[in-house]
Length: 316
Image: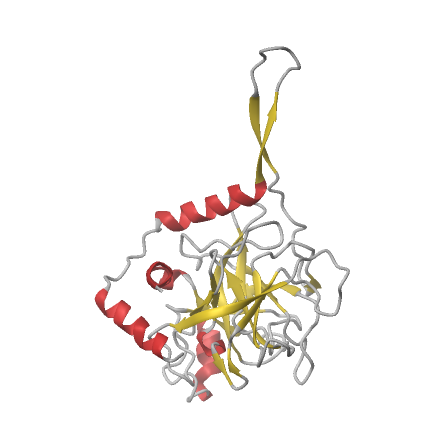
């Protein structure tokens, strides 16, 4: 699988670097996903001979309950882009789930680069449409998809957490519905925003088991100087300190945070035009603590990598 990383480096060296202007295909893709899932064409006509048939578009895009401060279980169909990454040794065995991810197209899941090749092995299975791993009668539609390949950003070098972003390609296309459809990629710089949503099945505290239920939490932006100060002793993982151009410093003053098992999951914002959609602005990368008030975590920004994402989706 490491050959994909070399392939990625070749792509980047040959391709031109994308600028920071909004990619109109990113905007268009988000609109297409919304239309395909939430808009329904209804045909009607009068019951008279020769009467014309007319049609009307019904928009079922509705907002979810606004997220308040504090961790809460996710609602059914609230995060249909949420993915869980794992490894299944053979088809008859249970999967070992260890990271999160976010569906961004029919075949690709965005995640953290360090999730692709973990201590438990290479990722080879992705679950979509899940809500509670311990329940069989919930309002969900879980399904496992096998992995065709994966690719880490060429700038990522283990054990460092710079450019900690990667893509997983599924062996088959996902059929979009209310339980499974992509999150939108960011079409503008998110650094002027102060409030975000993190989602995952990670543990709720150090040394605790992962949560069986999908959880959501509202987090706040911290000044870059906070993470710069906290990373002064993390020489191996962050030898150059905090990178404000490609990373976000996000946390909470309350005992709520992303934790073990949440890596690779999305940091989200509500879509400004479509209340039923989310924009993935960050990827959970490194935690400096786990639920400690005032200790933020490190998230990889998605916006600076739009060019690399677009090229990879087109060529990988």
